[in-house]
Every structure is written in structure tokens, then in C-alpha cells.
Length: 121
Image (cartoon, rainbow, N blue to C red):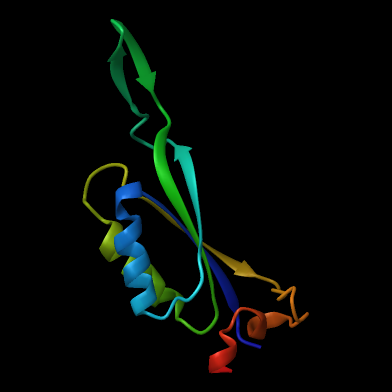
């Protein structure tokens, strides 16, 4: 059984379409996308609303979750870094986790076969 790895990419919402396209080109076939809010080193910014200054410390982001075993993790990381990097604060973070097991609910298949495209098996 090949190692299974989960990659979480948290980045700017405007990078989502470009990132999805780039990931599809490297044969990442599945992903889960969530709209999230967060803050890092930037701590947000201040806006004026009806004459009152308001601290906006949670900024909108997207979280893309990918689980891979066939596509090399380094290829996914390099693709995400290339697409998401603007060089400005707020580009986001990438987290990499080992996965102990995966189960395809429909068939009961476990391990790497559970996340692979059945057409390629």
C-alpha cells in the first residue's frame, strides 16, 4: 500500500479558480473546498463604517483539502506555491499530514485504492 497524504492549502479566495485548474493539470482529481476566515501575522486591518473605526481581524480565505497517493506530494506543493504566491502578506499556508487509512464508503475499499480513480486501477 502506498502512503496516503492529506494536503491543506489555505489561501486567498481570488486564487481558487487558478489553483483548481493547475491541480487538475497535475492529475489531482478530487478536492474539498471550504470558505473560511482567519488571521495570521497580518492581524487584519481597520475600516471605517458609519464613522466608527472597526478592526477587521478575520480575513476571508479558502481552504482546499486534497488527499493524494499517486500524485507526488512535492508536485502538489510546488504547484500550489507557484499559483498562490503573490509575495504579499496573506498568501496563506500549506499543511501536510500523513493519513493512516482511507475508506471508500460505497464499496468498502480501504487504503490507497479508496482514493484512486477506478479507471486508472
